[in-house]
Length: 483
Image (tube, rainbow, N blue to C red; front, top):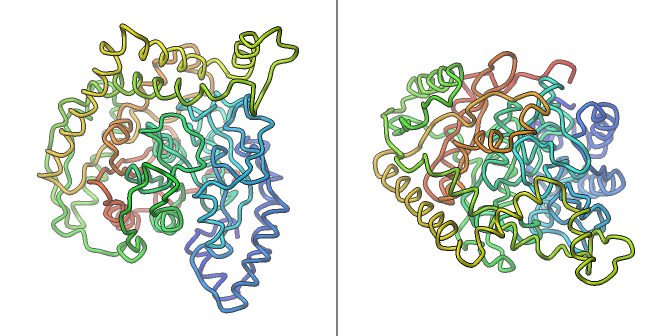
C-alpha cells in the first residue's frame, strides 16, 4: 500500500479495494518504524488521522467521491493546525499550539484529506539543507549521510521514503523545488497569490508560497487542486479561477516552445547535471517541443538581491516573537529589555539570528537606499527579463540545483556556500512565477531535478509538461533502497 501514488489511492478507495482507515493504519505504523532513521516528522497526529479516515470512509459510504477524500498527507510544520503543535522547526514555538487552522489545512481537510502529522523543516523556513531545525537535521533517504534539501526537507524525505504519498511544503527561494530535486520528487511552487498564506507562519511575506510535494506531476495536480483558490483573509491572495489541473495533464506538447537560458550553464553547475538537463530537453523534443536558447541577463544579481529582501522581511515578521504573548520566554527576566533579548537569544537558532541581523541592518536608516531599495530595483529587472523571455517561449527549462545533495554538515561553516545552492530557484520567487522541479536522473546515486518555469497562473502547463515527460521516463518511479 505504501507504494501507491495519490491517484492510485483515489482509484483504490473508489473501487473499495481498501478503506482510508486501513491505509492510514499501515502508513502510521510505517512512519513509527522507519522515521527514526530520517527524522522527517516533528509531530505525529495518530488520533486525528484515524478520526479523519473514519469520517472519510463514512462520506464515501454515503456516495461522496473526490480525489483527496480519504487520502493521507502531512503538513510542513509552519501551517497552523488547531490544537496541534505548530513549531516552525524552532525552540521559539516548541510549546505553541495553534488556535485555528491555516486556510490550506482547512481546505484540504474539507476535501477529506487525512493529516498524518507535521513534518520537520529548517527553522522558520531559513535554510537549504534542513539542518537548522531545533529538532535536528533531516536525512536524505537516498543516502542517510546526505541532506534532503530545505526548508521543506521533512516533507520531501517522508514522501521520498514512501512514508506517505504527498505532503505540503512552502517555497520562499526554492524550498519546495530544491528538496524535490534532491530526493527524486516532483515539487511545485505556484504563482504568488495562487495559494493562501493565511495561517502559514511568515518568513518573507512577498516571497513565501505554499505548494505540493509528491512523486508525480499527476499527484501534484491533485494536491494543488485542493490547496489553490482565492482567500479573502489573505490580502495577497489573487481572485483568479482555479482550472481543473488533472484535466489538462494529457495535452500534446506538439509545438511547445521551450527556452533554455545560457546563463544557467555557468562554471558553478556540475557538468553531469548539465548533461542530464540536456537529456531531458532531447526527451521533450521527441514529444514535439521546440527548443531555443534564451538569455536572462540579470540572473547573476538574483542571490544578492534575494539575500537582502528575504532577511529584511524576516526581521520584520519575526519581531512578533518577543516572549510576551506566545512562544518561548526566558526564565526570571530582570526587566522588559532583558526579556526581549534573552527570549530571542535563547529561542532563535544561529541561522535565524544571522538573517534577522542582516535584515535589520539592510532596513536601518542610512542603509535602506543602498541595500533594500536597490535589491527591489534588481527584482524588477529580473521580472522584466522573464516577461521578455515569455514573449519568445512558453516554458523555461534548466537545472533545479547546481549540485546533487551534499553531506550533512558539509556547508555548516560557510553559510554563503549553502545560499549559492538556490541560484536557479530564487528568481521565480523574486518574480512571483510558478516553478516545478521533476526527477531527471542520478549523479553518484543521488537524484537530480530539472526545473520548469512558466508565465503567471500557468501551473497547468508545468504539470502537463512534467506529466508527459513522466509518461516517457521512469526516473520518478525509482525508490531509495531500504524504503
